[in-house]
Structure formats: structure tokens, C-alpha cells
Length: 81
Image (cartoon, rainbow, N blue to C red):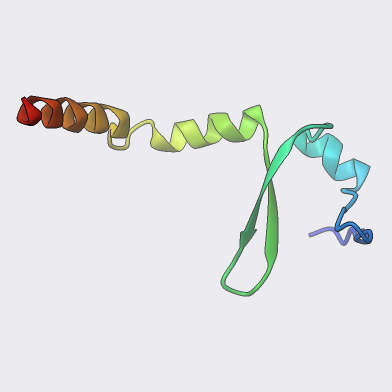
């Protein structure tokens, strides 16, 4: 693990080192997710196209949640009639 550091500004802003921005495709406007693990470490996860594609892949063989929600919604409509 590389030891890269930065300092928060008075406004709570943080500059991500250019090496990491380039490596992970972080550009101006890239959204990030902040996660805290069980050890109290903060993880910053960029929400990039690559990340979204990997998440979609994790769900590919999982349950069809949208289909399930659609069926439940349709069934509720039938019960209300």
C-alpha cells in the first residue's frame, strides 16, 4: 500500500493526489462514496463507469429485484380493485 497524504482545508475539502486520480479515472465532477469499515478506517470509493460496471456484474446472477418489485406492485393493484 502506498503512503500518499493530503490535508483538509478549512471548508472540509481534500485534494486527492494526481497519481490516484489518474489511476482510478477521477475527474472534476466524479461522485464518491464514503465508507467506514469495522476498524474505523474511511474508504473513498469513486463512482465511475468502471465501478458501476463491476457492481452490475456482481448482481448479474442475483435475484431480479426490479422484476420482483414490478410483480408485487402489479399484484397490489389487482387487490385494490
